[in-house]
Amino acid sequence: MTTPMKITGLLATLIILAIIPVYSFLEPSQQESQLENYYTNAVLTSTDLYAENCVVCHGAVGEGIGDTPSLNSEAVQMMSENDLAKVIARGRDNTFMAAWAAEEGGIFSNSQIEDFVIFIQQANWDYVGARVAELGLIPPEVIEMEVSEEMLSSLASLEGGETLTAGLQTYAENCAACHGANGSGTTIAPAIDSADLRAMPKEEIIALVNNGVNGTLMASWQNILSSEEINATVDLIYRWQDLIATGVDFPEVEVMSIPASPELIADGQQLFNIACKSCHGVDGYGSPMAPALNNQLFLEETPDAAIYQIIAGGVSGTMMPAWGNRLNDYDLQSLVAFLRSMAPSAPAILPPILGE
Figure 1 (tube, helix red, strand yellow):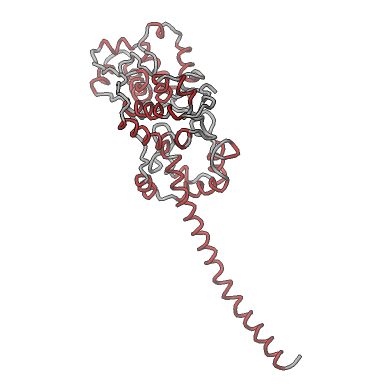
Figure 2 (cartoon, rainbow, N blue to C red; figure 1 turned 180 degrees about the vertical axis):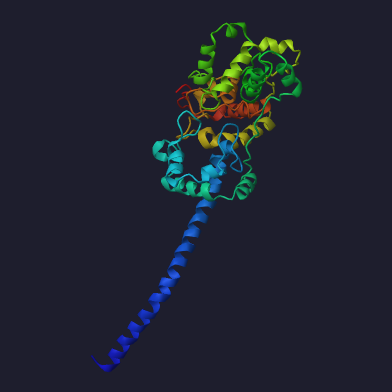
C-alpha cells in the first residue's frame, strides 16, 4: 500500500472514530424528538376522531356524560396501554361502550386504536374542548327533573322518609325523562303510578329494573344504579300515592307537537351529525356499528311516534342508548323530522333489526 493510501485510510479511520461519539451523543435526543413528534401527531389526529365519535358519550373535555365514565381522570390515564386498547377495541359487556376495532365490527384500525391510547393518556383536554367547539360538536346537556327542597322535605317527614327521598332523587336523575315527572308515563314509557304495577311482587319489579326487557325501550340498570338506589326507587313506586298526598304539584311531561319545518329539519340534521352519525353513518346510511336509518322500508313502516320512542328510550339488548334524558322534546322531534325528510330519496334496503 502506497503512503498516500495509508494516510487516506488513517484519516478515514480517525474521522469514523470521531463521528461515533458524536452520533452516540446525538442519537438519544433524536429518538426522543421523533417519539415526541409521534405522540403529538397521535394526539392531534385522535382529537378530531374523538370529537366525531366519542364526545357524545364522554363529553367535550372527557368529563363523562350521565353514567358514562370520564376519561380525563387519573385512574383512566394510569391504566396500562394494553388494558386501554382492549376496552377501546372490544368494548365493555353490559354497557353502552361498543367495540370500536374493525375486526370486532367497529370502524377503527389497530393503529388508530393505538393512537387513541396515547390520546387518552396525554391529551390536553382544554385543547380538546376548544377543538370540539370549533367543529360544532358540543354534545347536548343531560336533562334532569329538578327536585325541590319542598319535595324532599315533604317526603322526609313520612315514615321511611330517608329511603323515599333517596328513591326520588334516583328517579329524578334516571327515570323521569321517560316515565314522567309525575309518574303518569309519557309517549316514551308507561306510568309507574299504577295500581297494577304496585300489585306486582317487589322482586319482580327489581328484576325488571335490573335486567330490562330485550327488544323494548326498557334498558337494564343493574350496571348503572346500585342495588340500594334500585331498591329505594322501587319503594318509591309502591308509595307514589304517599308522595301525591303531600300536595306536590308535578308538571305534566308531554311530547311537543311541532310541524316539520325547514328549520326543524336543519336542526335535526345538525344534531344527527353530533349524536348519531358516528354509529349510523353519514346521512344515516349505516355503518358496522349500527343499521341504516336512511332506508325506505324502515321509514315507511315506522311511524313518527315509534321513531321518537326508539331515540328517546333506546332499545334494550342493543347498542342503541336512551336519549330521553339528554334531549328535550324539540330535539327529539327535530331528529324525527330530519329522518322523515330522507324518505323521498331513501334507498330500499333491509330495515334495521332493533331487537337484536
